[in-house]
Image 1 (cartoon, rainbow, N blue to C red):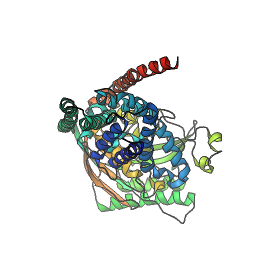
Image 2 (cartoon, helix red, strand yellow; image 1 turned 90 degrees about the vertical axis):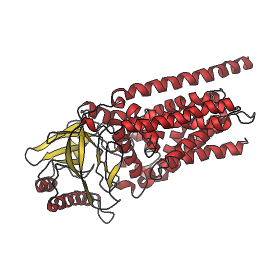
Image 3 (cartoon, one colour; image 1 turned 30 degrees about the vertical axis):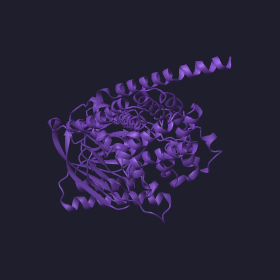
Image 4 (cartoon, rainbow, N blue to C red; image 1 turned 60 degrees about the vertical axis):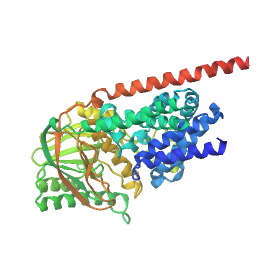
Amino acid sequence: MTLLLRLLGAAASGLLVFASHEPLGWWIAGIAGMALLYITLSPVRGQGVSLRAGAGYAFVYALTQYLLLLPWIGEFVGNLPYVALSIVLAVYALLTGVAGTALARWRYGFLAFPFLLTAVEFVRSSWPFGGFAWVRVAWGQINGPLADLAHLGGPALVTFATALAGAALAAVILGSGRALRIQAAVPVVLVLVTGLLAGLTVNSPEHTTGTVNVAAIQGNVPRMGLDFNAQRRAVLANHVRETEKLAESGEDVDLVFWPENSSDVNPFTDARAGQLVNRAVEAVDVPVLVGTITTDEVGDRNTMVVIDPETGTGDHHHKKYLQPFGEYMPFRDFFRLFSPYVDAAGDFKPGDGTGVVDMAGVTVGIATCYEVIFDNAARDAVHHGAQLLTTPTNNATFGFTDMTYQQLAMSRLRAIELDRAVVVPATSGVSAIVHPDGSVSQSTGIFTADTLVEELPLRDSITFAARFGSAVQLILVMIGVICAIAALWPIVRSTRRERR
């Protein structure tokens, strides 16, 4: 393969993996993308790939994918931060390229490559500033059979299975003999069959302890013509109005869920905001989970709080996993040199709670917006008794971009992983009702006022992923590191000898 063909192959592999993500959601494209990436790094017809070239090809793969996947970041702050983030994320792929090229020289390197890719994804999803797990390969498999592996090992196992199916498919294409091609075909078939079989055990009705009728309120936001303070009050008024419409409809609901920032004016310090929230709660006469901003001795908090018509203010969840460069600004003085938008970032402080709140006797687990990408957010909630999950979010800043669809895919994968229904209330959409098998029974449009009502199961199961998901990921990562060292060490020693 010529340099140009490999570069085109690398870019095409990134394009394919992008296409697996929502809103396109072509899950098979994710497997094809992994196959093409492995082919790009592999020797073809006697033409090998240097480690340096492999690093470059992997960088092109990643940069193509992220530039297509993340334009929503620039919707508010402009293209510079969005492009900069894409480049930074693509730098991690240099590790994939260098070690992946070395592994591709092995006869059975296609079996080791998925471990490597999972290990690099773990690093990118963990460091720095908590990492950026938004771009995990796993999210693109939500519409395919591999998504059902999530309840066995979480997103890490789904990423591994996608890369294994892709790399093995590449080995079938590149195989130099019939025996090797047959051997390589086995993992492809095995992974897909395992995913299909895993789907038979997803959604466990025997663990249903009851049902609850929930309502997700999407009040919508004004698009223009108001200053910042007036807009915040308009958003609150919209959610109050939609909740009162629910009460007038006669729907018999047990719990009502508002989105993140639905009351961006603190109802505990602003009398008018407090009156509006209480009016809505009294109208439906059931507990309402309200998204607001609170302040305590530590600082500002992004808070979801239960307001009960009888007992008043109840449990709360302070967002624990905050979005860097948005909800807080690391190294603010330094980054101010590059962008005037730096001072628009908040200064919120993370919470340290259990991730659950009590709503009329129902234990609800909360992963607020950005928290959905963190494995421990929803897992901790389940370990603390969550019978139902919610991922309240505020995506209004990102307009009509793909962001809200990508985020919904994450909530769907969490539902499968943890065997819980998930209520997704969004200020401006997409709001959705997700069942424990990851299916969406109802959803709203973007920038419309709407309400979703549905009866959902309450579960007490602890899936294998909830219990051992972190261990599964650690094992995959450790094997990936060992494979990388085993592949690179002989090359490093040989290079040193030649220099001597």
